[in-house]
Length: 194
Image 1 (cartoon, rainbow, N blue to C red):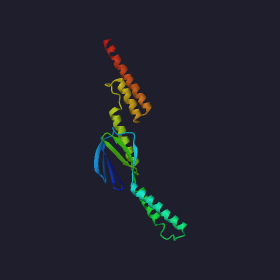
Image 2: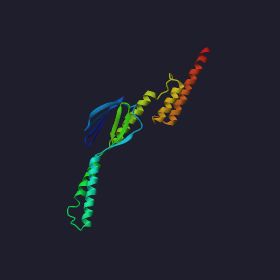
Image 3: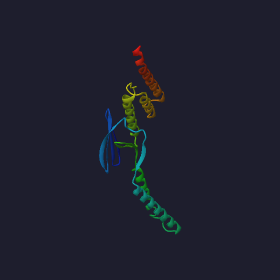
Image 4: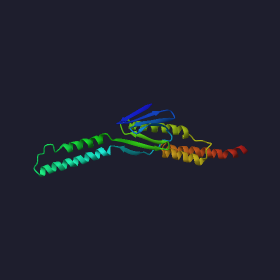
């Protein structure tokens, strides 16, 4: 499965494999790609906005210049012909800066950062990653492991609940199951002696 996002000179491709996904990017500063394990994908994210601040600031400056020029012409009873040019030019620059900005949801991992462009595919990409993360973590850690200590099993199921992989109720059931297994294991030597 693959998703491709494009905005201005930015192109992001998400390729989903069974055990990991590949995030590839191309922009005016370069290109690259990294593989990320679903299990290591973070829950928390931040927002980053990329915009042409220079163009926006020049636009505001020209709007201010146009307003001053128009106000001075009104004050001195001069002709208003052509006095709105700088306002119009400034408005075009501000609009261009606004519509060309790119907003990202950023997930920071040890392997690198994943930038998801906030467009119509944004929610679907994050949902796919989280769905595969949940499936992978359940396959790895979802069952009670009798080889682990009871404390490790309790911590594991509390962590899965904190990550929203399982519900609190499911966590409590798994912990009760681990406690039952630990009790049976503790009773086993006594039963063998009888």
